[in-house]
Length: 134
Image 1 (cartoon, rainbow, N blue to C red):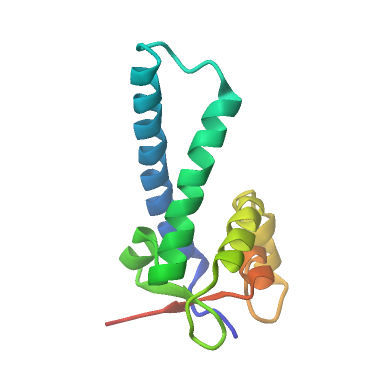
Image 2: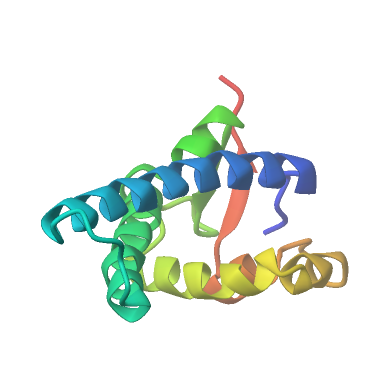
């Protein structure tokens, strides 16, 4: 299935969602600092292990339950499987891991060279984005 969502709409959605994810991270950092007697966070590994599940939960629950993140809703497209059903948690995990490669540029270059015009994270998770104009 070929995606009908342009690169620029994807980029708009990613930007919108990254602002939201940064808000989650700042909120978690604030809570950790308060719990830590207003001392700065010195253990980066602990902080990553705390924030990564929250970030994954935001994306996976949004994709699996509602087919959209807030950014995708603003840019009027959704994610689905070829048959139109919601994606699975396994697909969302594959997608979010490979999306880090796409954000580095490699995944979107991959989009230019495959027949379905899918970035690497959609191609291997067997998902695609579709416009929804209501």
